Every structure is written in C-alpha cells, then in structure tokens.
Length: 192
Image 1 (cartoon, rainbow, N blue to C red):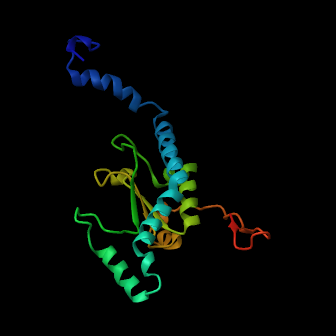
Image 2 (spheres, rainbow, N blue to C red):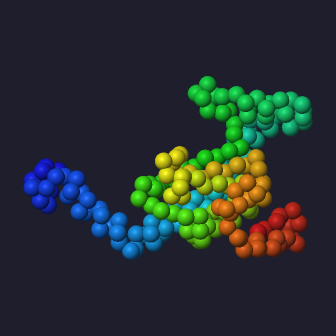
Image 3 (cartoon, one colour):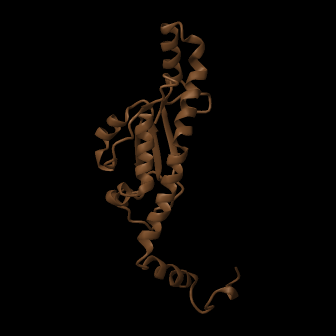
C-alpha cells in the first residue's frame, strides 16, 4: 500500500494504524469475540483428539510389537526409544504430544475461569478423560504472556487424574461420563 492510499497522508503511519485498531480493542465485544475464537479452536482439537492419541499409540506399537513375547527386550527397546533422538534432535518416541494453538494472545486477557467455562474446552477435557491421559494448556493466560506460545500438551504417560492433581486450576468440573453399555450380542465390544 502506497502512502497515498492511507486515510490521511499528513499523519504518521503509526497514528493511522492506532486509529483503526484502538476502537476495536476498546469494543465491548472484544472479549466475547476472542473467547468464541478460542472455543472454536478447542472444539476442533477435541474432535481430532482420538486421532492424536491413536497415532501416538500406533507409533509406539509399530516400533515394539515384534518384541511382545520378550519382556526384557521390549523394556530395553522402549527405554532406548524414550531416551535417544532420531538424529534430527527429536525423540524416537515420546508419549507427550504437543499441539500449537492457532491463536495470538498479544491483545487478549484470558483468565482461568474464562477458559475453563468454554464448551470446547470442556469437550477437550472429556476427550482426554475418555482416553485417560493428562492434558495441559499453556500460554493463554494473561500472566503467561511473553512465555511459550499457546499450546495443548497431551501426556499419554500420565492418567487424567494425575494431570488434574498437577494442574487442578485448569481442569474443569466435568459432567459424569455416560455409563458403559455392553452389547449382549457382542460381549467383547464395549460402546461408550
């Protein structure tokens, strides 16, 4: 955009930018709009949650399934996978999945309660509880600004309850899970 395209050529560029963004940042709907964006991100992540943990399990299973009949060799292989890198600095296997959240927090002021009450965040925690894995969300709160970028960390090496004990402030009060129903025609199948 050339200088002649700015609304007022006689003003410094910064003044023109602030004239556009400051009214938006002072709009009373700002927090609600930003929380809607975050809720949508959490809903999408919750929807894809089974894929993330399933792929993580398959990654490990494919690397160790041939050793299932030799517990000593299996344990040694798992220790090696957890300890060594793949030559590019990444672990050969990690039960910890880190997902970046596509949101910029430079102009947000999210609180713990704001996040815990979002329907998408509750869905995300329901998915983590169903998979029985720990989950944490970092980089979103106003006191975390300047730290690591927003992300969800799924720790398949810990149970959902262990995650809740370590980070109780960010774990919502979930409704009771639906009861397990066993199909009498297929006694080995359990449906949730």
